[in-house]
Length: 553
Ligand SMILES: Cc1ncc(C[n+]2csc(CCOP(=O)(O)OP(=O)(O)O)c2C)c(N)n1
Image 1: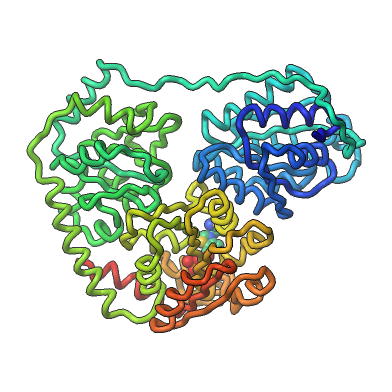
Image 2: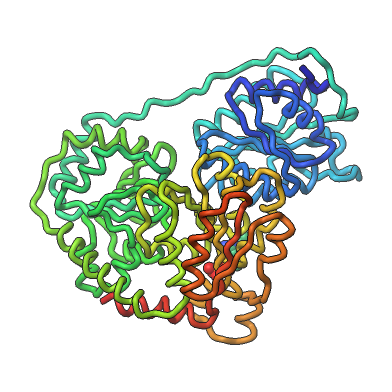
């Protein structure tokens, strides 16, 4: 076998291997040559070459999102490393394990006029779960630092930075390992709640007639079916799920904005919960946040093994455990109470669905109409990756089949890596993957297409509404040159030439009839990845969406 000659590089690679890390995304450079040579020559690793570090990190994020294990990105010294920051921050807020290994020059070479050199140590400090600032020689101290960083990524589910100084020569190899590494075990904590606490909280639960469960971003197949049934069979429990919650039951309210936007004060009063229980990650719906901040619950319990955000300024308890463990322990302590809480909102939901369908039947071709068709024709059992901006917000208004797994970078809600993440996720998963994205997001991350790993059946559905359509929907929009240039960033670009350059099959649609046929054709050819670009009327979209909310009552 071939190993890099530099012992520190050997240690890093050996420890990664011992920790079961598989996926390494490498961006080109010289300073990282010892790592590149070592990872690529070791058959235990799947190595991917991606030139643009921003895309590489989001691609890695997509892999880690699917495998729920750390993916590693490796880059050279200098500004290369800083291009990891958007994905690093996303990993931090979405709790996705991501390990950055950056080559550096030795500390004595920083700020003395050497090229491609910046102050790398702790550069992600504000969002990093661990910074391992290594020294040049292999040592037990360095091994411990590497272990601590990797363990933090695994256990605390987030990004870490390992900074590794290497001195030239960088490309030499040896055939024998020179290091014997130290391995620290993963130290997972038990997370059960004691009985006294359970009884105390069950007393509150048992006396409450209005319990609202709000589920944010949540990985598919995470919640036990007994717990889903427990919620569904309790008349005092209303469950509101976000599209990214991947949680389904006919009695759950899966289109929060559709339900609550038309509410009067009386209905908000009725909905105001005694107890709010949240689990999962970020919540997209601004309206539910506004509602709960104004109509605060008496109790807000958040269940998560790591963090609890006080999103509604009403957090009273963080159960530091997993939702399954919590509810399985908690259930035996609960008893039913008579309540019409669920029934009231099930009725509202039924009426809203009727209005929703009626509205769809009468509107013209628009973003709203396109979402209906696109979501209804998604293949069974596929993976849906959603771009940020209005894409995720539209998607929240439609029923998505329970066999479809949904993901979106809601940690920081950036538009900067949606395509790269979707491609990384598609590579890590055998499912048919579909990305729905907006034109600005797509053009922003077009380097995502610049790699050789895109699965042949990967589909991009690109809604081109001529700019950032979200800004038309937000209050305060006025059709001025300032708005068009600085907010909407209106443009006339299409994906046609990018598709050609990167070998994608490219089709377009601009009305209902050709959308239907294009969608059918999209899923029948799998010889090359595809882009279906759908042109919608820039100036009609926002009015159609806003009218939808008016007609729901
Ligand atoms: C990295 C980053 N820069 C800026 C923004 C602010 N932003 C939010 S939405 C948006 C426009 C997105 O437009 P598009 O992708 O065309 O989607 P649409 O709103 O039309 O659905 C921008 C610039 C952001 N979220 N992330």
